[in-house]
Image (cartoon, rainbow, N blue to C red; front, side, top):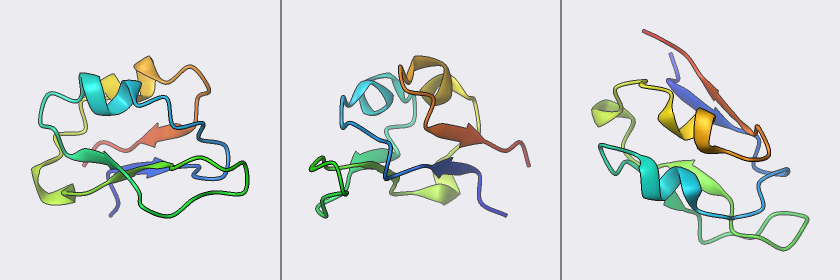
Length: 68
């Protein structure tokens, strides 16, 4: 099961989730979304602890966290 899901088309690339992730498992994608931003993505799902900090920091509520 996926631990964190990003609505990449709504992401504005602010990088707050990247900055506040305690495990540093979120990165900005190289691809560009329809709005012209690099969306955030989960780069290392195995080391994600589903803490939810990324979702709380996201000003656009584009992150959904699932507890294992």
